[in-house]
Image (cartoon, rainbow, N blue to C red; front, top):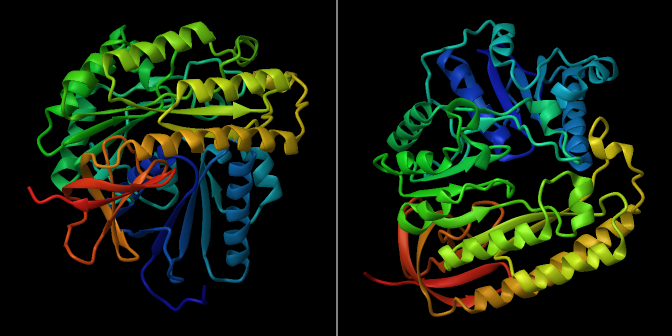
Length: 438
């Protein structure tokens, strides 16, 4: 950064954490743009006056990253390189009082539901007419669509309700308006996100309406893929499986965080399910749609997790053969129900258990990918780098899943277009392909 001369005010928005925060930052930037601010997202330049940091407060690593980022820009302010530092998001919602006293150099702190007040601080108006309008930070051909806010689930390890509040669904008609706006900008893939997507609709319609929402979104002209993230297993609406099987615009893909499989641990986690129910749901998913890619997330080292219970998870992963899988080491979060337990699994052992699960998954992923060699796939092209066009099949979500690498030497593909390719080679987490001339 450098000392600035006199010029018009410029704002840099920095986003930390999950896709829900990305969505919130995009709404914020659209509001700032409508108020004639010069706005950039995670700018590499050094000529902005104000930085707005949208923080994450979910687990220890995320909190540490958020605090380090705040301190970095607080120091920049002290040196005269930035005029204002504003903090918003989950960390600010959860720890505002402590942070205000510990980092006094920040100008303003805002929670997760205080966008109008944040804008007012910048002498900007909240534009109610901006229904569905966002300043996309993703490549324009895909976008996250947040279908609800907050969560009513009582999971013992999770602080999300403390930071995001109770579940509030966005009405179907409003989401359709948002989808139409995105499609008009060139968006082809909608990634549906929420704290708990399968709860969608219960609060405003009296019943789960996720399947109806997906059908309505599929009718939006220009939208070609609809992808579902963050499905809670307990009370899963089975009509969603029918939509996935029968609607060609709905990807054969689901992100369903299961967290664990041992019954005793699931009970302590307050997940509201059992191994038998989980296995039955996974079997029904694969029976109704054998082509479905299932991604899950697990937690290792939950309080009182024994080695035997961990080994049960490893064996279950090997048998279940998830298409995609991620693992987190348990983070002992204050004011959650699990905080009453002793955090008795040493950090080194948590990491060892994480790695053991991921080693098992790596073998499964390699087996899955090698079985695709010779397949013809439809791929959405995300970018070009290092002599390759890089894309994804419908079985892969951006940032977290497999990518398909296509040599750029002999053909030209356009970013954001679909291409038909033949899979020619595979590694554990990526595929190689060549274009098939249609």
